[in-house]
Length: 364
Image 1: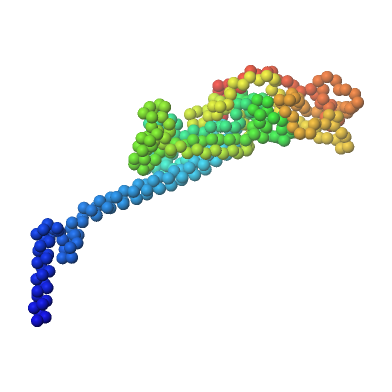
Image 2: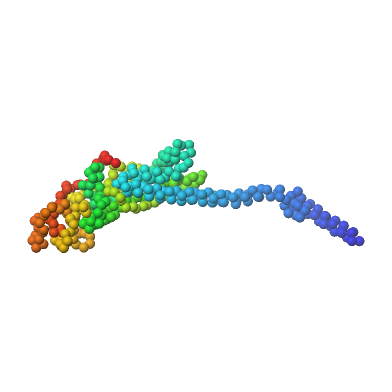
C-alpha cells in the first residue's frame, strides 16, 4: 500500500518535469536537477565580473605608485636644493657651483646606471632626452635674492672678490654696523641682512613612468601647440621648492655665469641707473674703539636711517694716529668728521656708475 503510493508520487513528479521541458521554460542541458544553471554556463559571466573589478583596482594601484614616486622625487629635489644653496653660500652665489651641487644630489634618482657607465651618465642622458622632446629645461633654479636692486643699494667695489672679478659684490662682514649706517635700501627696500640671504627657487619637471599617464596629461591639458603648451600639456608634472639660507661669503652678481638651468629672477631690473656714487660699506675693522670716559662728538641717532628720507652718511676711513681731540663747542673743518674724540679723514668718493652691467669675462 505504502509502496504503491510512493511510486505514484514519483511518477507525478517525473511527469511535471517533462511538461516543463516541453514548454521551453528551461534548457535541460544547462539545468541541474534543482533547476539552477550549471557552472559551465557561467564561465563568460565570471570573466566579465573579474574585468569589471580588476581594472579599477589596477588603475588605482598604478596611480598610488606614481604618486608615491612623485613624492619621493620631491623629497630628493628638496635635499638637492639644500645642497645647492650651501654650495652657493660658500662660493659667492656662483651659478656653476649651484648647478654642480644640485646635479650631484640628484644622482640617487638615476641609480642603477643600467646601460650607462654610471648614474651621472644616465642622468645626463635622460635630461638631454627630456629637454629635446619637450623643448624646456628639465629643471631650473632661480636666484631670487640677492637681486639686482639689492646689489645696487649695497654693493662694495673695494672688496677683493669685486676687484678680482670686476662684478658688483656685497660685503658679508659686520652686517650690524652696515645696517646701522646704511639702513633700508633706496631701490630695493631691503636691508643688508636680506641682501646677504641666498634664496633659491627650483622647478623640476617630473616625467611619469606609468604607461599612459603622460598621454592622459597631454590629452587633458594639451593645447595642440607644443610651443605654447604648459608643462602639464607636455605630459610632465612640475615639482616646486624654495629655500633661503644665510650667505657665508660675499655675494657676487654673476651675470655672465648664468645658463639655462641657473639664472637670476627675471622680475628684477638688471639695468638700474645709479643716482649717487657708490661708497664702500662700513667695516667694523675701520672703526676706532671708544676711549674710556670720552663721549663722541656726534653720536649716531637711535634706530636705522632710511635712504628715502635722508642721504646715506659717509663711511669713516682709518683713524689718524695721535690726532688731537675734537672740541664739541667748535665746528670741525669742512670735509672732516669726529667720532669718539678722534679726528677722522674725509672719506673717498667713487665715481658714479650708470648701470650694474659687469664685465663679460669673470674669474670663477
